[in-house]
Length: 65
Image (cartoon, rainbow, N blue to C red; front, side):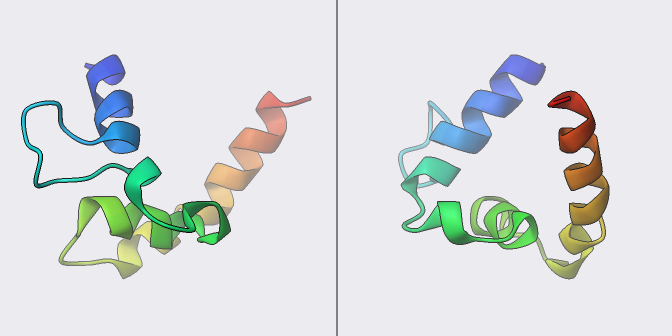
């Protein structure tokens, strides 16, 4: 469910007060995409997010034309 996934990423899971979302991370606006994703997802392979950072920037630039 994309709506649930987006809300959970930014706000944290509604049913788990121990987990946090991106908006709970101090200074998230200054983080790289991969560091922000890792701050929320806590992946065992944090470097894997970085390979999607440049494609995401290209995609966002195309959307904002």
